[in-house]
Length: 218
Ligand SMILES: *Cc1c(COP(=O)(O)O)cnc(C)c1O
Image 1 (cartoon, rainbow, N blue to C red):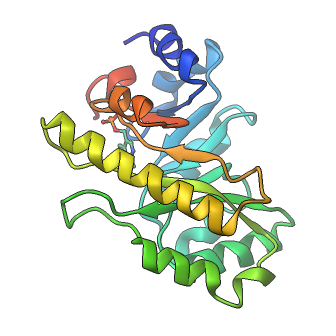
Image 2: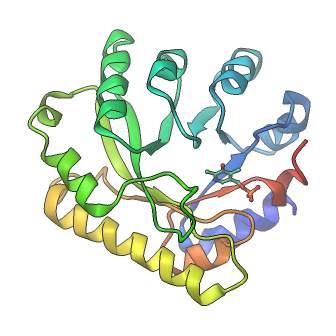
């Protein structure tokens, strides 16, 4: 699909597009950049650190994959938003590496909303434990700006919608309970190539679309 087509679909929802460029080389990504796209998503640290230095410096790189604690240091100097925080330990490490780079790194809490056990993420109780951890208040170099989740891979649109609505409820509950005075907590990252329209209807502010824009992955 053309970039302009998907942007026109997102506009009425005021949702943002993260173009998921994983597996695609810079020469495949640049045409989108030249059309004005600045937000790109990658899910592997090595691939991201290979691409970042050879691509324009004003790209906002989103990290959307499972992140191992020992690899945070490689992306901390430049990453724009980490979508996949799924433990207190990881958040602590991001804070430490952000401080070393004298910056604040924005992150999302990833929730497990799908049926599949293969998908990573927190449940609500774990997220509350993280937010209520007494150390969290001292971590000044991370800022939680919302939540992220992936729906079950299924044809059943009602199930997918239910899962997205569940994530929105989690978002609203956390917003009311922990972030009421923090307008930066506003992102609901949900929706991929096969389900972004359902995600938009359920309140997504940020869709992560790969294959629909780039074609099948290499
Ligand atoms: C690969 C990936 C996407 C994009 O998937 P498509 O189906 O190609 O749009 C979105 N989110 C995450 C977390 C991914 O790993």
